[in-house]
Length: 184
Image (tube, rainbow, N blue to C red; front, side, top):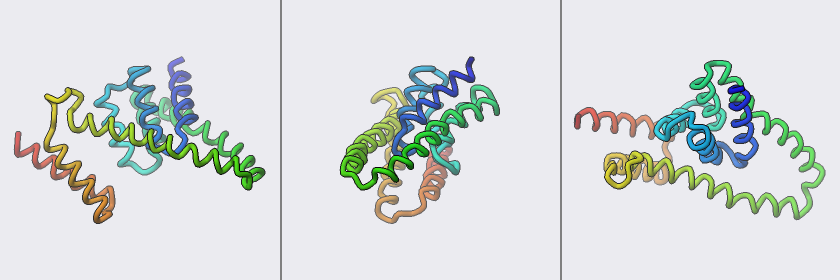
């Protein structure tokens, strides 16, 4: 019964995460942290970090991680299948419909109205993760100036010089680790 619940949870996430993995982050948080309580918010932040650092789509990596955490390899398989099944079904149907109706203005209008919603979902996920990184879930008293400096430096570097995001994560991790090590 737990595996079915896990499958249905990630099936729902896979079904409604239109626009890519970053859109799925708030949906995964709502299900895994808020609704089911399978992970704490801190564990969820670690999950997002790991899912971004590993190759592959973020939502799929997150599903696999949660599945392993809850039920081992079998859970990973079930959660991963739950996450990809809606896409397999929908992409097959949409490809057939798009080929048939792609020249209609209605189709173009539908696609352009979904874009702002996707941006809002990504911004919501980014803000949640930023607030957790800067305040550690403790409100203003938990403010972490080191995290703010690393965030600002990474943002400037990524926008101005466009280095590899992996390199930026590794450098920030090394700098942050060094600062925390020397500060005790």
